[in-house]
Length: 249
Image 1: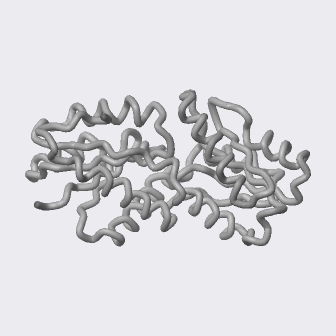
Image 2: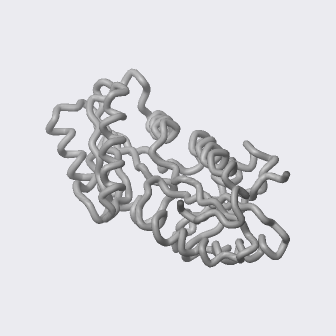
């Protein structure tokens, strides 16, 4: 039995850096799993669109698909937008929606990789306060997840870790930077908990103006690519379990 196609679903953006980063991540996933066909679809702004990819797969005779949301939390897009798009897919496709990427220890490892690439070392952890800066959401579940990740990350040795949000929620990045400075951390670093560049990551960068270190977005970090493979493997066993798996179940 052939393996299901992995369809990576990204939000899309008018910013060309977004799609370029998504494609770089997908190339890394393909290098990890050359035995799996990996496609990319966007919800908005970029092509190919998710409906277009699904229609093309059905026309080719593909039966099984794992749809993997390129999202860090289970907010609106994971709960509503993506299930709605997948529900309108050609009926001959059997689709399983994989879990979102976060939370995961691999994401924490990717965050630390980006901080070290920005100039920190493991020896700096005890004197460095970190702002875990996410895009933000109106979904309470998503906000709670970010706060919990910050609490867990603090226990790995950092002076302190504070969550911040570029939109919808507070505090903003600049507020969290000032809070850590007032707390007495000798150095402040901002770690964007976002996958690709764009308007909100740029807002995070502006909010980091008074920080000492600004890490890059997670992008095609090796740990993120490994996580996509993990989510695919966890979901693929359910593909074909029934004539049509309930999307988002």
